Image 1 (cartoon, rainbow, N blue to C red):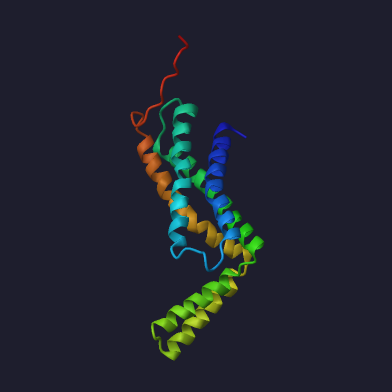
Image 2 (cartoon, helix red, strand yellow):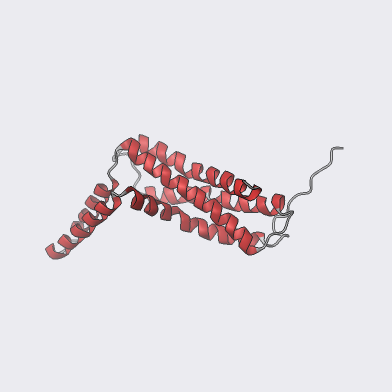
Length: 185
């Protein structure tokens, strides 16, 4: 494996673990009664924090591998690679979480969608349509390949944005330049 591939794997694994380990730990300890109402917000904030490894990895690529200068496209590709590895680890973390907890997310989502429609005083015909759509989602979500893809897509677009911003900023060699190594006195 070359230096760039190793860099992508290292930073991608770090980023993926930063988001997946807390998710698995929380899934194992939370109950429906203790789950926060804004869990999705916490999840996406954790993803953003984890994906700071994209910026750090692209900067490492620019400063250590390329000697302080990088063009936009190579920087973007490194950032996308890190984001892809991190998103795969996130999706694997979700699969581990549901395997360990026995969570049937499809059924829970179906129930939530139908209850939300009932709360809006939906007509019986519309409620039946919502129920059919929710049940179709649950059947689709039961397929582990589709579920993995859906989970991957929860995180990867955020990584794409962070990779693009990182590449745009770091293509300027004067932006956060590498520090010269100090010689011992």
